[in-house]
Length: 375
Image 1 (cartoon, rainbow, N blue to C red):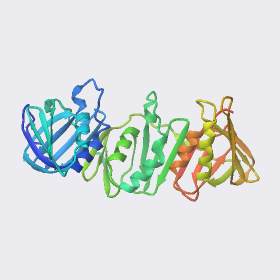
Image 2: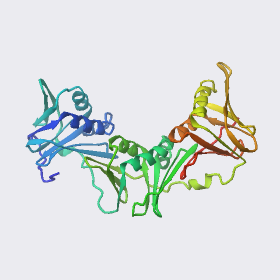
Image 3: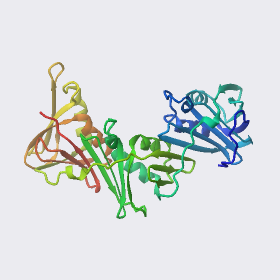
Image 4: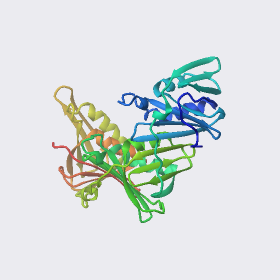
């Protein structure tokens, strides 16, 4: 984009865009646009047009997103308008192209026989989305990034009292990429044979990574730029900048069990179905479900409630070692099972008070740990 455009009140802007591209861009910035900020300007999206095309920007001061749309620009300029209103309007438009005309902080949107005007705010009040210069710069396939994020991000904490756990640990070292996430009740880790050519470790807010997954396509490459306190993802038609969570990520390796007294291999779908049903009868609020792994080759899944009744199901399993009984939060176990893309899973136990370790069968570099509940 041409950064020499003057930003001043009342500057004109006129551009024609493919409607579907505008819808995609607004969908990509929707969750970044604030609706409750103490800074009213953050409720807006910024629309910038120059000879290279049109750019849509949004930021909440923690995450900033830009989409480049191309388009036919008749008049260069810049305007900001309420994001939620623009998104709702554009999502209900029908046609091939849409024309945006801005003057005196008012944006007129024309699509076919539909015309609307939105009152905006001066663009010079809008925060500048920073760029990450220098630092480590690497490229990774979008398919690979999507796979490794999906393997761990669900386990990150939502409790802001420990900010470091609300992020995903991202390590590039020795020709491998390691991602880990934990909320202190469960832990997910993936180690992939991906040589990024640079070594670094960083904790990226999980919210940021959720936005990355929403805006990235299905194929291609993404450039990852890691600075001192910010990280940037650059796609073919968009970019996202976010702060890095400061602090040292916990040494989670020390909680990974190094030994077990029992292992059981089972069909993931069979256990998942049993857990879903058992959770209906579990103690209210605890979601607790008991697994009784028997040496003769079965896992008994049970739960009970004084009000609702009780549930018992048995699924076949290949069991090695001593019989064991353990109680888990059913939802936590289900989250891990749902993240595996294999038919079979292996569970390793070391007693009713030791963490349970789950691995997808015949897959290296994946593990999921769940802390047991007190019976």
